[in-house]
Picture: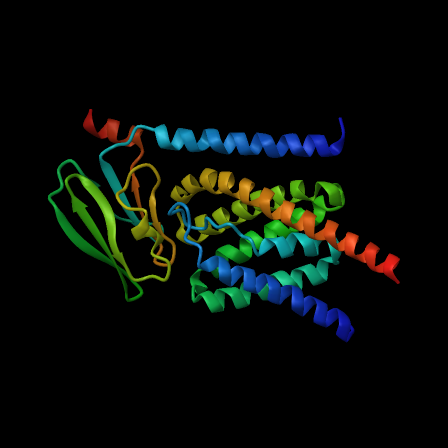
Amino acid sequence: MSRNKVLAITAAVIFLGAVIWCAVILLKPKSNIVNITQDGTLLYSLDLSREKDRTFTVEYKDRKNTIEIKDGRIRMLEAECPDHICVDTGWLEDVPIVCLPNRLVIDHADKTDTDAQTR
Amino acid sequence: MNTKKLTYMAMLTTISLIIFIVELRIPTLAPIPGMKLGLANIITVYAVYTLNVKKVGMIVFARILLGSMFSGNISALIYSISGAVLCLLGMLILRKMIGKEQLWLCSIFGAIFHNIGQTAAAVFVMKTTTVIAYLPFLLVSGCIAGLFTGLCATYIIRSERYTMRSEETSR
């Protein structure tokens, strides 16, 4: 087998692997516990099924991020950053909400952790 | 470096910057940080296959620095640079193994390396591994975009050869 064929197959395997990995992330069962992390430190750990509807702000170097909780869902309502990708992500579902400029991450806690908590 | 070479490289940088700025106007398909078509990399791939290491590096870094200033998103610079470094290293090694006709394959690997570099920088900056959840989505879009930019560069190189040949015959 020629070197090019080996490389082409490697590329195809990486591509298919990535597709499967995407599916795994999208199909993973989600817990109700949501972690809000900034710059590597955990700010809040919220149980969405118990939270009341509210909005609150998180600051990073004088730039504000407004987070909204409504009907057991969470999203970034406003962000003072150049790209607004975190706002465009919408409600937290499968992929974590990330604000790269303000180093803020909103993500579901691992399912295993919450199982341990509820038992 | 003589004037001709300098002008040639400046022209390549300008073309890639123009492509970069036009691409800023295209809305992204999915709200994934770092997801982009990366059309400016048509020039990167072209340069990797026609120029030496030093010149490719100069063109790419001039584009990234100026591009981040023009787009006004300087905080994204660290992700672009770490992606570009890994991408260039990978492509310059693969250049020796993959011929000009299979350039698209090198371009796909370039995109994969770029995504890995980007994500590694994000993990480092954000101090959390959560952002790795974006890597598979970046890889899928990166492979497709890489194939497209690679094919574009292939056609540029091919048509360039054709024009050179027809110029020779017309003389």
